[in-house]
Amino acid sequence: MPDKIHYSAEPSRKFDDLVRIMHILRRECPWDRKQTHESLRDLMVEEIYEAIEAIDDQNPDELRKELGDILLHVVFHAEMATETDSFDIGDVIYSIQDKLISRHPHVFGNGEAGSAELVKTNWEKIKQRERGRKSLLQGVPNHLPGLLRAQRMQEKAGAVGFDWKTWPEAWKKLVEELGELQEALDSADETEREKEFGDVLFSLVNVGRLAGIDAENALRSTNKKFQKRFTYIEDRLAGDGRTTSDSSLEEMDELWNEAKRELG
Figure 1 (cartoon, helix red, strand yellow):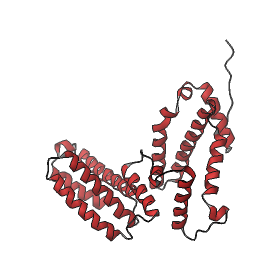
Figure 2 (cartoon, helix red, strand yellow):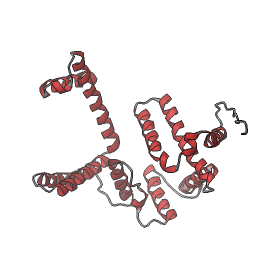
Figure 3 (cartoon, one colour):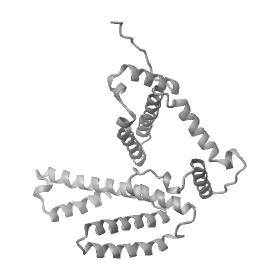
Figure 4 (cartoon, rainbow, N blue to C red):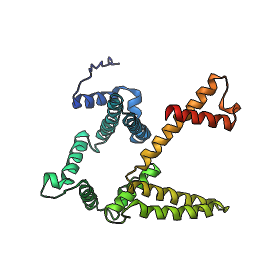
């Protein structure tokens, strides 16, 4: 049996060194060697959300680390593709540069774009033309979180003029949908209830979008606020040797109001 090869590696700021380390790990590490594009899929999504959390927390040191984790996934997937002669990291780098150049004709060509809104509109038109898509909405991934996907579809439709001009116009539609939801909730038809509830959420996202509010960010912020306040309730009760299970709603509601005062 041949002697085991011992590799040397030191962290550096060079991209090529990261690619080299990944290449070695695919050969020498049992865990890295067994991974596939599919097995890493959910882990990559998790890393992206951890980066978003670092942004929300305004923590640049944590963001630096999380961006490194995302970059690792890019290199990892590219290394696996190299092994099957599908593409390599150079192809990945070339394709994104090609996209940035072709979709910024106002910077790298003779195009005109006097505002960020016009840049976005031109980007969508070029994107649809490049990929030969029959619908603008084909570019919105099916696996995006529901609120985010709703907002992205609305933005794309709005970019070609299918949109209300202001949020008060969209608000009228929301009120209409709320009435339909109330009627559905009075019925026993679960399918209709779910459909109307979805319509309300979609309409609410539209109102927020036209008012300059990102629905996914807004809900994520509220979730975080709820977690902090509910944890406060649990901690206060634990200090008295109690749990939420043996506390009344009135007691917890009082602590909730206390958490609002203390935590905001």
